Image (cartoon, rainbow, N blue to C red; front, side, top):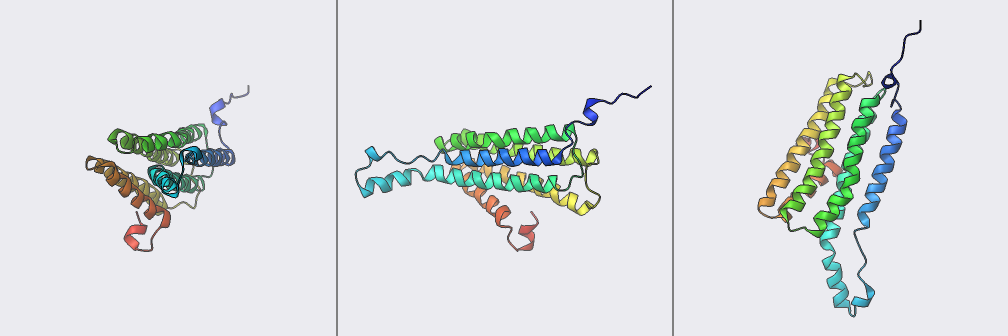
Length: 211
């Protein structure tokens, strides 16, 4: 008598397809960010001064666009770093990363919302919540992969700790940035951008490059 095989035992095992889907979602989300930058209406511009004023008025939207582009770039790097350490996937890991991609797809909305209401704490906190979900789900996927033994053999304990430490510290810094909104949303945005630049540039200073 043949032993039955459960569907979940062989579903969602393709890392290559998961990587391809992730790249596509990130590419679309990063492209959608720029759609919130609208060229000033030519009919409303009658002088160089008015054109300059219109460009200045775009500054908040440009700032949130750049901030979110950095955010997605950092999280794309983080996800790809994790996927590169997996020897295989399973259905549960795939759905965890689907949840992560759902948070990625929300980034254009939270960015546009913040740009429209940039002086409001609720808009800033909604944006931070989007980042928090991204980090939490990404960490959850890593913890699950460790529990399910999905890693490559060459993954060391130090590498495991480095990935976990990076996510936890980053989320702590983002939370500090969100808390600064009590003084004004500009303080939060400035701090978050500094955190992102640190992770994007990876400065050679030892204590900075470890976070």
